Every structure is written in C-alpha cells, then in structure tokens.
Length: 492
Image (cartoon, rainbow, N blue to C red; front, side, top):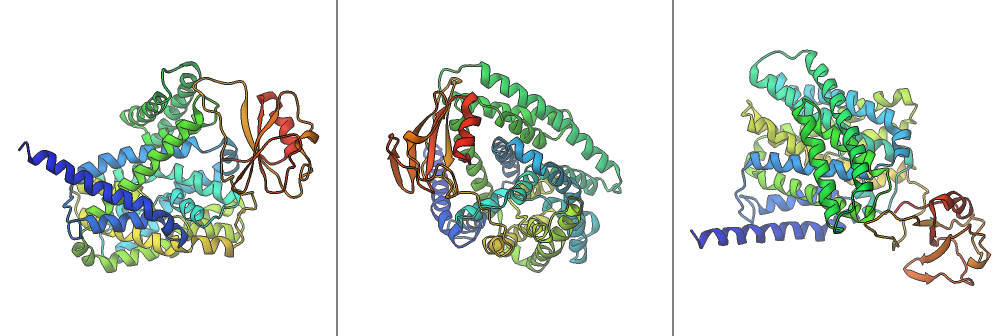
C-alpha cells in the first residue's frame, strides 16, 4: 500500500500535467483557426479517457459536480470583477431579459425538440434547461484569437447575459430534476421559486460586494499573496450563505464581484490577474472532465438525437428566442441575429448535466451524453463561424487595439495617483506634438510610450505618433483634464 499510493498519485499528476499542458499549448493554434478552445479541451479529455490512448477510467460524477460548482464560482467572480458599471448601464435591461425570459424560452423550444426526438416531456424540458445558458468567455476567446473586438453594445449584452443567465439555468435544472424524481406535475411555482432565489441572491451579492469594498480599502495585509486569499474567501461566502437561505449563490457571486470590481483598491492589477488565471484553470478542468466522462461507445447510441437537438438549439431555439427578446430594445436585425447565433455553451451545461445523474433521475445518463453532443456541435457550428460572421455583419469595433506591453503600479496600499494608458488616434490634436509641447496639468507626466514592439523613453523632444500608447502618471483629480488633452483612454 505504501508503494501503491505514491505511484497512483504520480500517475494522476502526470496525466493531468500532460492534458492541461497540451490544452494550454494548443489553445493559441485553435484560436487562429476559429475553433473555440473548449472543443480542444474536450477532445484532449476524450483522448485521455477510458476508451482513449490515456486509458484513464474516470466516472466520478459527484466529484465533477462539486468541482464544477467551485469552477463556476471562480468563473462568475472573475467575470464580475471585469464588468464595468458603464457596461451595466448600457446593456443591463436587454441582458436581464435574455437571462430570464430568454433562458426559459430557449429551454422550452429545446425541450420540445428533445421530446420530438424521443425524450418524455419532463426529461426533454430538463435537457432544455441544462443547455439554456450561454458562455461569453467562449465567444471572446475566439474573437481574441482572431484579433477582433466586438462593437460595444453587442459585446456588453453578450457578456452581461452570460454572467446573469447561469442562475436561472441552475434553478430550472434543480426544479425540473425534483419534479422528474417526485413525479409531481409542473406548475407556476417553479417560476415563483426562481424569482425568490434571484431576489435573495442579488441582495446577498450587494451586501458582500460592499463588505468586500470596505475590507479591501481598510485592511492592510502582510503580503500581496494574501489579497487573492481574501477575495476568494469573499467569493465562496457570497455563494454559500445565500444558498443556505434559499437564494441563488451564483447570482450573488456575480453581483458581489461587479460591486467590488468597480472600486479602486490595493493590489488591484495583481488580483485581477490571479482571478483570471483561476477562471481559466476552472474552465480547462471542466472541459477536460467532460471529455474524460464521455464514453465514445455510449455516445454513438445517442448520436442521432444529440446532433438533432444540437442543430435545433443552434439554428432555431436560441436565435428565435433572442430576436423576440431584443425586439423591445430596437436592436438592428443583424445585431439580434448575431447575439442569437453566437450564444456558445460553456462549462455550465457540464456541471448541470451531472445533477440528474447524482439524483439517479430516469434517463439521466442519456441526457448527459446528449449534452456532450450539444457542447461539441455548438463549439463547431456557431463557434467556428464567429470571426467570419463578426466581419460579415460589420460588428467589428473600431476601438484601438490594446497595447502590446503594459505599465502599472502594484501596491498593497491605496496610492494618491495612478498610471493611465491613452491611445494616440491619427485624428488626435496631440499627434505629431512633442512631449514638451503638451500642456499637462499639475503633477501629470508621461512616463512611457509603447510604439508597436518598441518602448520609447519619455523625453521632452520625444514626438507622439499616431498609434502610440502613452502612459501618463496623474492624480485622480487631474485625470479628466488629461483625458480631454490626450483623448481616448485605453482599457487594458
């Protein structure tokens, strides 16, 4: 036994290292070809599974569900931290409608399709609920790999929807699984329960968000590495406590992160990088586990049904429901179609598909296998067309590209000043001027210029050229005046 345990652990870590390392290394190549990295992770998981070359027999759905819950908390928290309040103001109403009515509508239409393909009604609706939420990270990973950026309104709507629609999908899945197990008929109480959960979750999220703001601004920790520990603790508490009080923990986590993320606090840039890394790790783990859980010989048995439901979801359910939901907001037809078409599925369906399996619900394994098809087909058909469609519909943002290098201040204390990047547009009044000619206010000073792959020292005779990224140190009170002088501030 003493020899067996270390050997088994070593084998497990070796296998994980190969799978995760391969996923990371090949992700850039996948992005260049317009293929979502999620598909790559899944395929590597299948290759490492019990019927693949890795031969890893992994069938622990309970572990998948628990790890998946943690993964979803990390993904939602990271998304919330990077959601500016300006985006909430521009896209909250359409995103909220898509995240509630849109999720219900998508679940219903997909459920009808699943019933036509042979599932009994409750199982069909449960399948529809499991795959009803979207993942904007999948869309934006493809766009980043192609070097594209979406127009603000479309991008904000997709991003906010993906952060807000997971709770509704979770609530519907839990309720429908319970109805399937109990044999009781479905009624309107499911929607009432969903509304209560979301109200409780949002209230807890606001509370934890403001508590997090207070903690991060008042508490000075001994080391920078402790700040991610504190924010991670807040994320777990924001999920756990409202869940205990019959609220939506997932909505609470997202709301708390949005409130916290729109405040300046010590070690901010370091925290954002840590949570971004944890969110990516969570996504990689979930897609790899989906691949490991998939048994190709079992998938063949539901291939026809899985492919059929996947195509209905991609071509009918999602686009139709989205276009109807966006009608009141006067979205142009091409934007409504785009939002409906690129609603890619992510880690959430994987997590939710394990719930009926753990509950031993009738038909649970068939539902899980169909979900596998839906995630894969969804990554291929809408996913691979995202860059082409973005260009074809003219939805590429004209915003300047992000700088190839970044300059930042990292401190565990609140500083009276910040380094802000600006982009020199060809039409800008400062294009062609020297730094000595800039009437910068007060203590503001240019610290560095990034020109392509070149770092240009900031001297009085240095000339600003179109396309430069200029880093300016200034006091908070001077930022508005610097903004008027230099123009467009960059989001790093």
